[in-house]
Amino acid sequence: MKPRSYGKYCGIAHALEIVGERWALVLVSDLIRGPKRFTDLQRGQPRIPSNVLSSRLKELEDAGVVQRRILPRPATGVGYELTEYGRELEDIVLRLGLWGAQSMPKPRPDDIATVDTVFLALLSTFRPETARGLRVGYELRLGEIVVHARVDDGRLEVDEGPLAGPDLVIETDMSLHSLLTGDLDPLEALESGVVNITGKRDLFERFVEIFHIPPVPVAPSA
Image 1 (cartoon, helix red, strand yellow):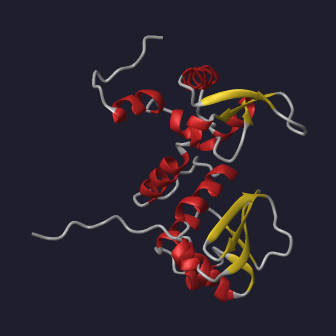
Image 2: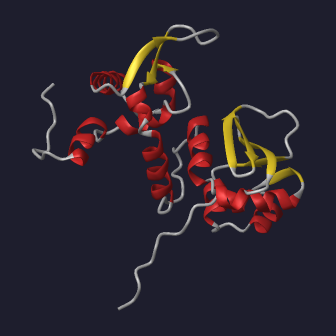
Image 3: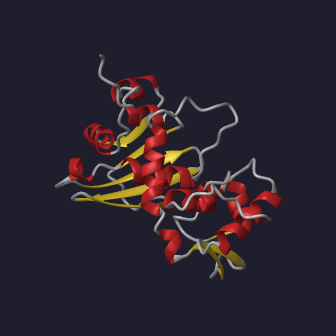
């Protein structure tokens, strides 16, 4: 394949030559949580053809962003993981995800959520300054997706699966986005049944404070 080039001696142009092709950065985002097999990556991107997935992974390998490794049990087999160089994209991916979430429309009928999208949503929307002095464990359920978050005095740990003894369990759907933008009021969400919680309501109110998507900045009128 002929190397793509913008014809500019520029760091941004070179970065886009590496991860600017369709699917590339999305694949990087799916590997932030950890190594995955080819089939796992394909399952997370239901519209990507197998040959395109193979090509993108090969391109990312050649660029030193991704590498293959033998996965330990119970996964087993050959998987893909970010290299040290590739992991430097994590902060960029999170900031880009938050930026995109500010103008994201309502989900389309065939849009899906995955463990990785919820995982990244929590990491990218977390506001540590609003969580000072707070120690709480949240368990978030979106259908079959279960993710938990531990908040410890402004620090955050997020992982897949249920949490032993959570302080609050939140059950919802992709309305989570509207909740984090403030378009959906927490009280209205509970009263309408869009969100169900097990635990104290005040911890739910804190949840939407510490995980927040800011509005798109409005230019001042002339």
